[in-house]
Length: 133
Image 1 (cartoon, rainbow, N blue to C red):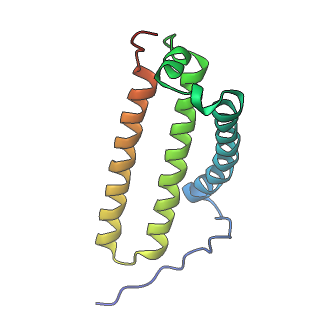
Image 2 (cartoon, one colour):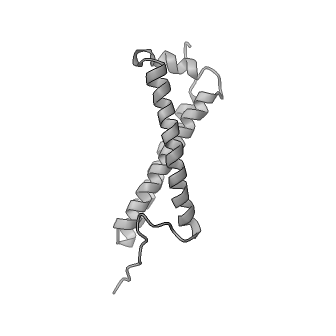
Image 3 (cartoon, helix red, strand yellow):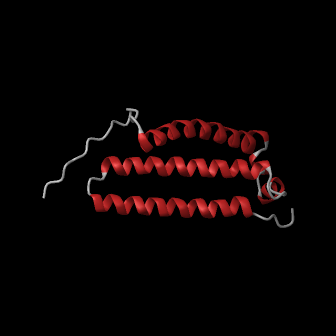
């Protein structure tokens, strides 16, 4: 039983088309967006406000309305970071795991785990109801 190794594109090479091209483009654009979101988050949480100010009450005050800017900002940061990370790990698994069954199992675990983390993170960010704020 001989398995043919498929030729894989270099990490630095842009895919020629299809879904992989869209994921390649997503990684570049989401990386830029994550850089801006993360730097903004760090600036707001650690430079505009001192570390001593950031507490439950601080977050509760920021989230005091149901659908405000900060909830969506934090949710966008969570979503982009998870998608970017899961897609990066998917690429690593595709590049380095040769056994089809093992690759499928790892990819399934990655997608289930990523979906689970995104779901509980979304619940925390979007459904958080401040108590005593």
